[in-house]
Length: 417
Image (cartoon, rainbow, N blue to C red; front, side, top):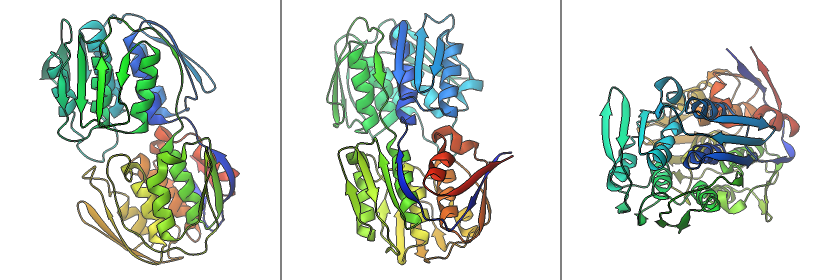
């Protein structure tokens, strides 16, 4: 089993560019199912999850071709509308092929999803939205079986904010008859990126990035070209990497407003942050104070940066409280941080971190999910001695060549196994 070995104590300095966003690339690839023909994407990251998405597209009769960060999808009418368990179980985002298949072909059979074990993450709101559009939904043998002769527009209020549900229903509604209104929709930048791509294909979507999205259904969509947005979670992770080592790191090719909630908290902790139109710089800092965070949907603090920020707080001055409001099981990294000397008391949704500057020491640890793997690598950068992070296949699901980017900034990291 591959592991990443980190030698702590190296201050990170320099510039690095953010890759394309995993959470945008996946949904864009599935959105291509809405229009037969050749779709072209650029800035697509090389990740295990992207490979999993390509395998699912292949199973649905598509052809894909990659040339560096350029990615082509040739969509043909599938012989089967079934997304099998063996493919879907590897990646939760696979449920997002449901909306396109149902809207385009009137049926879909999609396995209930897998992914990181960070909570139940039910798809009830996806299915309720599809039902509101007129689909018949049956849950049987571990599969979602959906049918609709023709989807009809509806006004739908999400009980809670859901990124995947917003994306799935937005795609389905783009080919529905009439004008669909989604209220309490997710506002994430990835939603805007998807809407921009769908509009290039001929969709008529307004309000993406706000809580009310209006989709005027059209009869047909056509293939388009699109550049995937930068990965704001990777960018935030790299900024924290600079901060936790007391270094000066600039992350380029990013929209700074996408990580405003992080940079605000870093400033509150005592870091100096510089921002340009397309970059964020964290400046050298010998010590920082503990600050509290609560995760919440965009534009508030992202759950996908909670674990990384917790690493930073383990070596802060003072005590911080981190509340996790999005997922109920996203503190599995706590026990691994404690193996490295962190003083953390976790409850179900809240963790109290008693910071100890210089208090981490290297240890063998195990990644439990995608963001936890990054959290442990960051902790290793700040620890005394050597940290060995196992199960780094989690890391490869969502970070493109992270060790190479960290090494460029001066970290001592290598893969073994």
